[in-house]
Length: 230
Image (cartoon, rainbow, N blue to C red; front, side, top):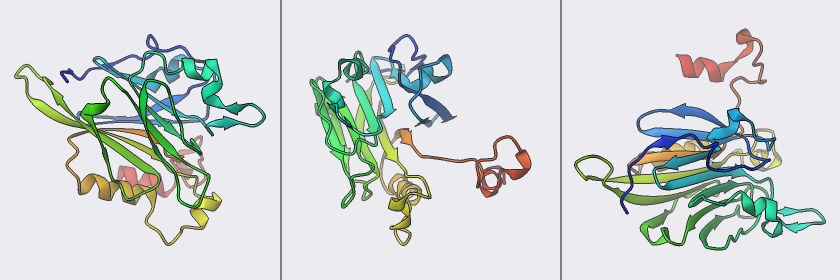
């Protein structure tokens, strides 16, 4: 597979009414995209899909793969239209197995809970080049690919796509698992102990900048902001 990495604007790639995303961090080695609640697509949400040259990657919290009284969302033409043109997608809160035609879908569900759920879908034309990685966490899934010709010298480089869903702190799922390693700690362990190359980190982290999300008052940003700025 020969791909030159290039981040392009997504608003010309897809037109769907219910996707929101926000870029949290972008650097030479990592691009982080975190999805928020589904809202009408606006120009500020155009980063929901990232195109890496010929690779179009979608990240989306679908808030359950089925709708009450309507059945699986994959039977909804408007839902399926979202995947037009993309070759890789990362879904969060699937709450069940997702199957999309022409994609190899790598589903990961929580043990003993219907909440959460992840799916990474890779177009069948590319699937043989990707390897699914073991993460030891129900809320983290990852695939890795070796990219060729990423610079003028034609060198190869590893790229790992990591898909994360981290429940809200006050959720019953989190409260019942206080003694277990947190999702973010598991993510740090996974990154530290595996050869991943470049990392594309996507998902829904339910993140807050302060203890009570007081965005309007800088004096109340709390310990999270202090940790980031210290």
